[in-house]
Length: 518
Image: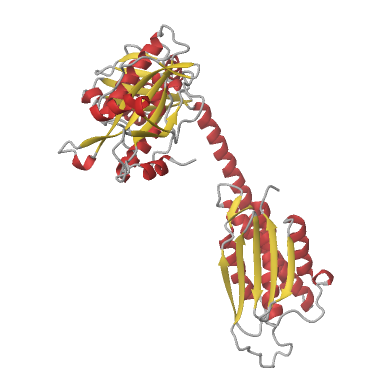
């Protein structure tokens, strides 16, 4: 389905600033929908074709939201629907006369009776505030399901009154509020808890959920009649936090839109959002939404503790592996037999490559690693320790991306073995130490390339060295390194490995690793 931006850009002449305003409206109009007990549909006028005779204006629905406080008037999605003629007469009035339309008899959608309303969406250009520039760029259709109509309760009357104030602010261009930089916390919903303040800051209404949230903070009396700013400052366990909460509530009474905040007291955490009520530009009070997020924050802290524990475990595993590598290195220095010394040195490199993965995991917040950096470090180490007849350059093409730990640990060992083999067997050192090394025409190079295709990771380690010997059979080789590669590639990684000569000279190893669920 097309997005709001796609639909607007394709069918209207609205500019980037208008589209941004509509996006902010769609991000905040859940509040208006819940308070209105109504579906909201965002309609934009469609641009006409200059080659066609002038015809009645048509409207396109670019966004829709259903209330959680009442049954919907629409069972089907309306986004993308184009309507015209008598069906949009109320939208035309709101757009051209720039006023909220509430006249008219109920309409029927199948077996569902509904009441139509239309709210013009005005956008004020902040760069032209002095000139008072503003324009109506869209219309909100507010459609209420009347099948369950009854005498409204005190809660519903307060919701509807507040909804009318916010609807007038939409028509005035003062709602939705501007975005605050870095604000990513989701806003409280009407059902979480609603408090209405008068112009002096006293509570005129508090929903049961709002009352419960403040009871968690330690206030057991009724909120109505209390000065919410002073009460919040008094209840907060942190004086600075309490003063901040009070100032944000007071600033909303002055017509400002403060950022949402969290307040803690008595082990409870409450998310607070204060919105000024400015119908027709006149400050009449404030709307305060509250959500008890105590359990959410408790779980977040538990997850943070768990993540910290896991990172500490990886850090200790890395330290232990480095200790093992150091012990093997000391043992190698004390061994006289060249083959035994070489075997111990190879074990040092294998253990060190695994330690690299755990070092990366110890600095990550999840069980995944950015693998490119690990490959680069392993490749550098391979060129430094391998015995070759002349310098060999390592190069990486493509990206491995982020890999889960269970793949990264085995893959780094496979790559370590393949890189060492590529250097040592592709560009071997002369058996006679006094012999002159044979320098080929082209510089020695080993290329590690990686790309993802159809949920598979394809890795190639290629060199331009002397190639595989005649009659070479990878499955019959006795080298420990190749045995490790085959075992890990087909076992732990559940993939495949192929060693072959390159057409232009040299050797390449092709590894395919599935990345699906393991």
